[in-house]
Picture 1 (cartoon, rainbow, N blue to C red):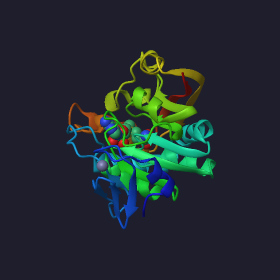
Picture 2 (tube, rainbow, N blue to C red):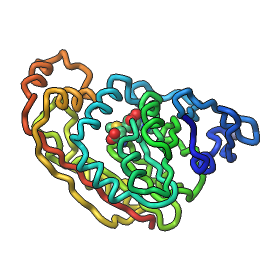
Picture 3 (cartoon, protein in one colour):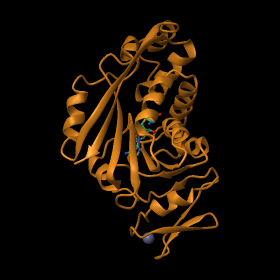
Length: 273
Ligand SMILES: C[S@@+](CC[C@H](N)C(=O)[O-])C[C@H]1O[C@@H](n2cnc3c(N)ncnc32)[C@H](O)[C@@H]1O
Ligand SMILES: [Zn+2]
């Protein structure tokens, strides 16, 4: 498990912003700042502590991986792959276990992928998810350890959106693909999951509109029965998965097994202004 060469070329030292190269299992810049590759193939470029509660935890990542492999979000993965496949470097911001990025890479045989996420546990899975995928632990709210204008595509699926860094790393003509929940998403599960902000689309426009022009928008809307395991995993993969022992939530979760649940997500593509 290692990092594809074309991913290493795009990475920058997170201390001094110089290019890095790989010797053995260590990434090094010319000033000799060094970052070891983990046995699982990802590299941790973080050097500052991150606030507790930021990164997805092991139980959340396990639940997300199980839920995604059940196929419940396959229509969303298809829409993201259709919007985001292009040759070159595809960066997935907040990639989690790498499910969407690996689907996009399947559609883009000449591309390589860089998964960024602050959860090393999620990136253990991402690093194994696809042969052309490299993974680096990073806090998306800090300037990214990535060169200017190297990416043909940036993906953001349900993850923090740093518009300035999206803009800086995208090559001229590059494309940003954003998936975000619409009102009605998982609504049948009530407060077992986080409520969707009804002004989410407006907030997306406010966050991105200064630097990007919206080029297209698709809606993936589907209602399908969720098995007991799918209900349990979709709850456990989000922040609302904690505190299941309060307010009869566990009973309500069990009662939701077999219920029809709505997937409602917008997939929008944006070009640099
Ligand atoms: C809702 S999950 C989505 C993961 C993946 N895109 C998916 O849909 O399967 C959000 C992801 O963002 C990551 N994350 C949250 N805050 C972050 C930050 N400041 N920097 C980097 N990653 C962050 C979490 O660890 C988690 O993997
Ligand atoms: Zn350095």
